[in-house]
Length: 297
Image 1 (tube, rainbow, N blue to C red):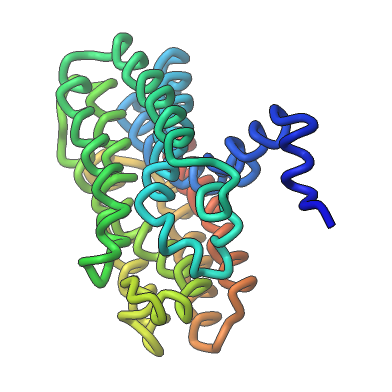
Image 2: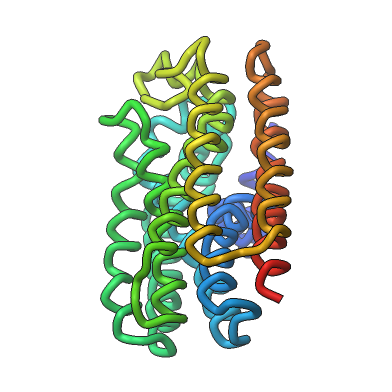
């Protein structure tokens, strides 16, 4: 009996190849792009003391999409031997053979060239900060082989977008920049630890490290501690920027939101439930952004 997938490629090679490229950059699921984008928007709105310029909004929205897409390609290239052993990832384009590494490298080069092109419209300080973003994106995929909390490096990578956004507005880095950066690092530990619960059993078998494995039965405690530090950093950023009560109300709402998730983690949850909790963090990003915006009106 012929392989349907092979038949598709022989009869119409373009459509399945485009679908494979879309899946390679996770086009159907943009939660990761939003989690990268929100800290960048926090910095843009706070540094601008209100609505930032349309040009900067477009640059950082497009830049977040491009860099997240490039990041997942780097991750898949680095992990293609691991992904084939993990139930959730074995059908991805590289381990399944839908695409070859040369195809992934070609798309990666295009995305990075487009991201570099955006720098033309930004100031010299932002240019100087940009190589760090590329270094972090390229380093993160290998951290799960070394670090027990690779989510820490993911947070640094995602937080760097906010540092660049602040520099693009203010032409300098200030205390609030680093407080938002610290909050983003802690936030990534929270949501990516929850995300890693999906693969905990497979990761243990193949020797991949993650905070979900490190924390084990105390995952709820690790997530709760990271969430508490995140809220502390956000509170200090609000105080440094003299934000009003609307921002504090947003942080209280986020605290309840995260408290609910910590309580859920005290009981055993399925991979599907873990993914649902992970996706809920889009709302946390929105709530914090709304608090910043309303406090600067």
